[in-house]
Structures are given as C-alpha cells and as structure tokens.
Image (cartoon, rainbow, N blue to C red; front, side, top):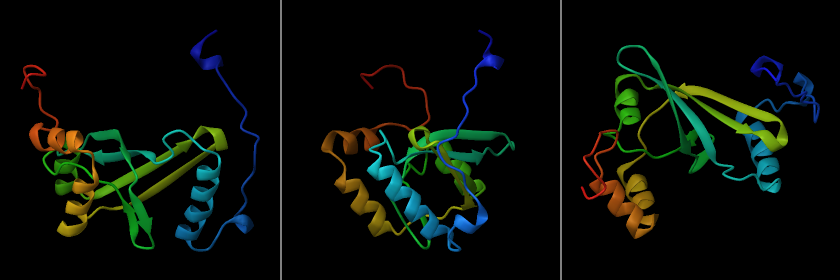
Length: 148
C-alpha cells in the first residue's frame, strides 16, 4: 500500500459554529474534560511550534502543566533551543492531537514567562532525579557521553 493511500475517515462527531462556546477557554475546558474522561495516554502532551532566528519553523512535544483564562502553561529550560527561540520571537502555536476523540486543538498566541515563584514551585514539584537532570544537563547541546 502506498503512503498516499493510507486514509481514515473521521466521523465520530461533527462541529458547527452554533455548538462552539463563545469563550475559547470555555470551549477548551469542555474538550479537556472530554479528553480526561477518555483516559487518553499523555493527554497533556502538545506540540509547541516556534521559529528559529533564521526564520525556520521548529516543533517539539512539551507537556501542558496548567491553563486558565490568561493562557496555557508549560515549562522549559530558558537556555534550550525552544527557550531561546521564544526569547527571540514569542509567537508560538500549540497543537493537541487527541486521536481517540478524532480531535485536534490548535492555539496560537504570544508566550511570556511565568513568575519566578511559579517556575520554582514547578521545579521543586519534580522528582529529585528529574530536577538533577534538568539542572545538570546543557539543554539542546551535544554531550560527549552519559557520564557527563
């Protein structure tokens, strides 16, 4: 079978404008609750798309750690590629793909850092090994070996 022939019809639900909440955060609330009830594996995994200094698109998976009427929260190392890209150009796109619900949610906007206290609270909520790894690893840089 050719790649072009791989196809699936998504017929689980339809969506029309009269079914959508006026407030996009309320709509996300509704869909988030459906995704949670569906017990989707890694329900909070989302693609973060940014742009490099050279104008090239860049994407990677990050984890949603919270959201409210002001925006969506994820954490990253400020010195990582994505951290540097967001520093140079704060415009980004998030994409959730919830295959089980036959749904994608795309969010476009401008990123800004959370408060230092919120960032610290998240860091200290992580398991000790994860904190050590985040502290010790030079994000987005090649290292000679795991011994480093």
